[in-house]
Length: 306
Image (cartoon, rainbow, N blue to C red):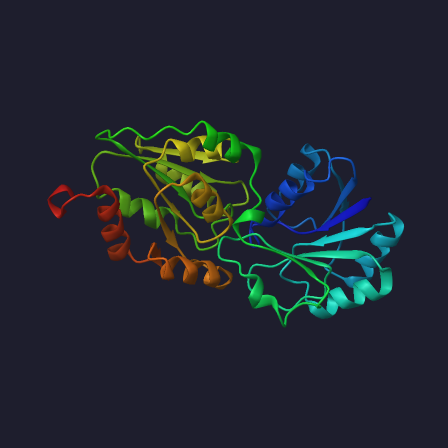
């Protein structure tokens, strides 16, 4: 089978789409896999090549270009993981090529596809009843969560975090950190004694140089850029501060206490799910609320705060 993934990454879009697509691609070890992607500022197309897959660079997110690629490579299955591709686009693609379509969805949108994949822990099949064709195969919820091997292996090796005086915090606010929130969070963390922070980000982060400058004199902060040891860092943590996104699926799987801070609208469904389950979530960042939640997780009194 010939499979074409259509997804992008950039400083604006982030890196999550490509990263989860690479996990899905590994489920087709005996098929020919190709990626169609734009060369946007801050992209991680090199990650696709490093994984051993072919890359076709497209100029625009146009239906015409995608149809040409599907025909050129005799594609049997098109995997679409792109917020800029909608129901009408998918319907025309299906009509013009006859290829099967697997569509990723995170926000309960209407799709014209053969397979719908919402791998987030909050996803419910019933919500797609009127959003996809009746013949569409639904893959929803945690049993379909796409996890890199490092998380599966990491959970097997997981040991209980020792009750040390120094607590370790894992922070991941998205590979691109659109909201430039990392430094704001660190300023709150500064108010606590005996904290060690592992903050992960990527070269897609436009604010990376500012972040590097901020942390360089901070011995209690370890900055990890483009790390391939995320699961290991999570395993060392007493708790995590993350966005309610793909990373939250990983944190949930690893069973790590967390605070989730919503930074963009497409995180609404995950945010609402977590809030309903009474997890520590924030609709938007505020210093006061974050400080309160950190105190709860540390089980510390105000007298321990500077």
